Picture 1 (spheres, one colour):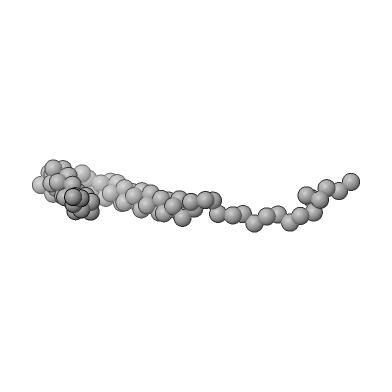
Picture 2 (cartoon, rainbow, N blue to C red):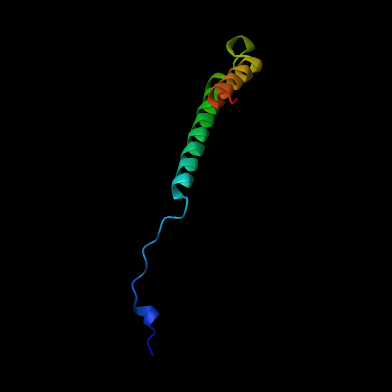
Length: 76
């Protein structure tokens, strides 16, 4: 005896709910991984840079905090 379900064509796969968000997250993650890989390759090729060739973490932190403050804007 044949079952009707055996005769129906397979349904096309549907994108998952939130697929756009998932794809965007994957792209951001891939970009971060590529940046890290490039940094590690540079260190492997050239060694760790000396302190005179780097930016102090305090400067980087303050710059990033200023960027975040500017993005947030002022709320009354």
